[in-house]
Image 1 (cartoon, rainbow, N blue to C red):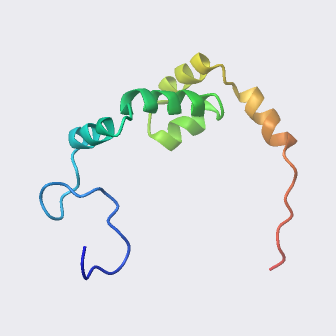
Image 2 (spheres, rainbow, N blue to C red):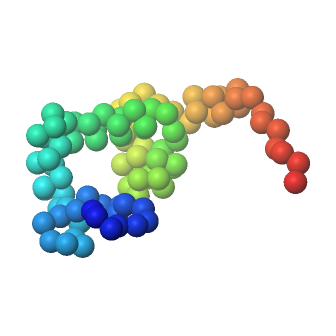
Length: 97
């Protein structure tokens, strides 16, 4: 936009000025670009569920813990693998204040 200063808006613009794009219109635009939003979302959720504990997944995504546990079991992820990975990470030293 001409004369605009500052950061761009967080939501893609909709038909009316100042209104965000509806989710249906966003899906139409993504499909036109060759993306499959529902399948891509499911894949991302499946991958994330295999990498983080269900409690963290539920908190991050705002879903019920029982749903997060189901997703985690389906993806083969578990707390033990996550905890072992975190424990094996090198300890970063904190910069002096």
